[in-house]
Image (cartoon, rainbow, N blue to C red):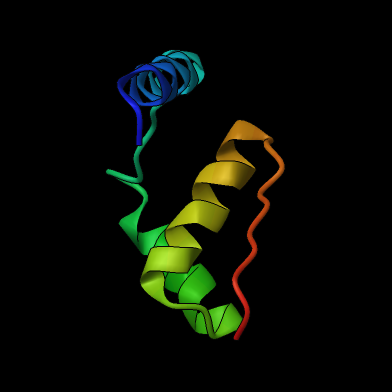
Length: 65
């Protein structure tokens, strides 16, 4: 990879990171566990579902099971 290409990639990653809204599932453990049990999802995946619901956000994934 050329230096210029690497620098361009770093700039893109920095811009994406700047636009991201960071959140977490601290305090939502009981709800995460309930969703995991009800849906058969892992707690990891259920945490994304719970946070997305709380934020009224669309959750998109490309996982294939």
